[in-house]
Structures are given as structure tokens and as C-alpha cells.
Image (cartoon, rainbow, N blue to C red; front, top):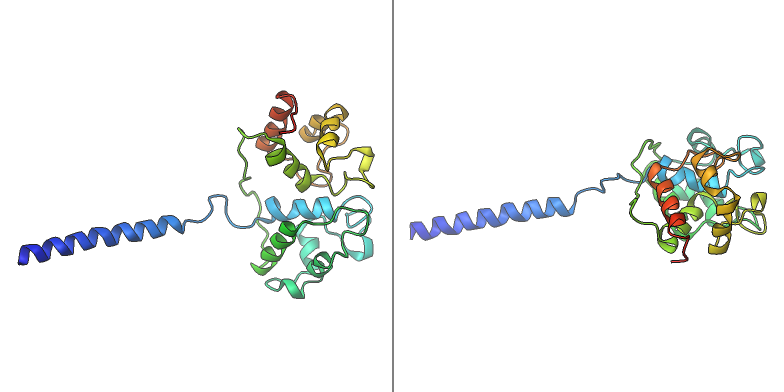
Length: 216
């Protein structure tokens, strides 16, 4: 009887420890960290709000310069309270960007909401979520253009007549110096006003071009 009880307790202990380890594994945080301002939020503001002539450092339309963390949080951001943050309100009500410019997607709005709700932290030097082996147009290249570029490069207000909101435009941009701009070796380093894309992201675009720039 005592031996049976011992075996039961030992077996229960093993299962309990395994269960705890399993739960800990399932609750592990994203290795790339939570929402990061520099990686996830700033590109949205740079592309959709701080384009030339709008809320950039040069013009600061309506008194709003949305080109960097300090400027963004100093005007219209109430940390922890998205619905009390003026910048978020005008974005979610589609008042910004103005008519004729590419609006934020539902995912981008939610990302900004969650960032503010979490305290609008100034995350920097965050690991970029990127798989250098992936270079599909629909899964990688177009989402990248949407994130960093279409705020300025979409009709009817496509800067420098470079249209990056669809396959044909992105493919045509190859002959317009796309890689030189992304590498910051051309006359117009892109994204304008933003940090250079990560080496992995640039490699993805290069690989897509080397594959013949397919619409895959």
C-alpha cells in the first residue's frame, strides 16, 4: 500500500512539473518583444502623417509635427488612454490623413490604439520581424511598401510619380531606382524621414527582384 501511494505521488509530481513547464512555454513572450515604437509605430506616422508638406518637421501642419517620438507624444497623446488622445481620435475618425491620401488600415489603427493603451512607450532598437528567406510579393513586398511607402507613393498624390500601392507600380519602380533608394545609395534615400530599412528587409526586396519580380 505504501509503495503504491509513493508511485502515485511520484507520477503526480512528474505530471505537475510537466504541466507547469508546458504552461510557461505557452506563455513565453514574443521573442521580438511587445509593440515597439521605432519598429511598429513610427513607420506608420512617417508614411501616413509626416509626409512632405503635412505633419513633417519642415511644415508641421496645424501645429503638429509627427516625425519623431518626442513630437508625437507631446501633442495629442495621453499615455494609457487612446480615446482621450487627440491624434488617435482624428486617425480613427478618418480625418487624418486628409482626403486624397492613403488612410490607415484597421490593423494600423489598432496597433496605435494598443501602443497608447500600453503607455505609448519609446521602444527603440527592436528586432525586426523578418525572414530573409521569404520574398513573395503578396506576403512580403507589398505589405512592406504599405508600411513604409504608400503614404507618399500612392495615386493621386504619388510623390515623384512613383506609385507603390500595387504590383505594377512596385515593379516599375525597380527601373526608377527602388533599390538605390532603399540602400540609401541613391539621390532619394527612402523611407523619407525614416530610418533605413533593416538589412533583412532590403535583402527580401533584392531577392524578389533577382527572382524576376513575380506577382506571387
